[in-house]
Image (cartoon, rainbow, N blue to C red; front, side, top):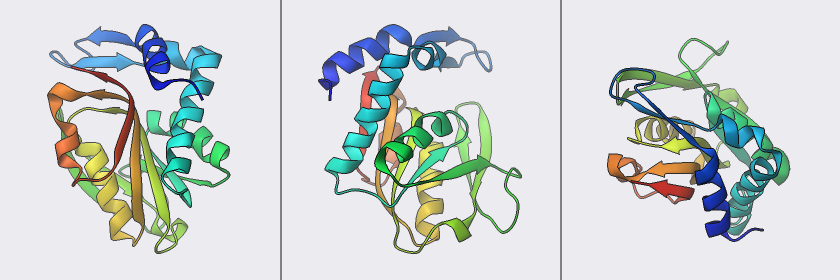
Length: 180
């Protein structure tokens, strides 16, 4: 595995800042250039999978819509475990559980299908950016509501000035790159 400082530097060069997206005053972190760089994308996936292995392994990886799917599904494959999508409200059929949360620019609700999650399963929660922590906190609440154990949260990037880590109830959090 690469040294995390080398990987963080490569990621920093490939993540593009987009001002005023999706709304005025919001700074968006565009990870598409990183995803298009196959060697860096592969190293990010392996790094996130190695974090789960070091924590004693997991039974499932959950990814938060939408960019958490892009990172979480290959991490699940690398670990040889299943993938659980946590989706925006109204996108999943059948019985679901939901949690609402506030964003920098509004509010939203996420859902999951509890029937796909065995009680007591150890789950790694993956997303691209830890910002205010609302989405990740809601997703962790959903997992716990179904009887799962949140083994940890893994992010490509953390924006430390937004204080999202404080909303995660002391859960183990790993990130590849931090920015102010």
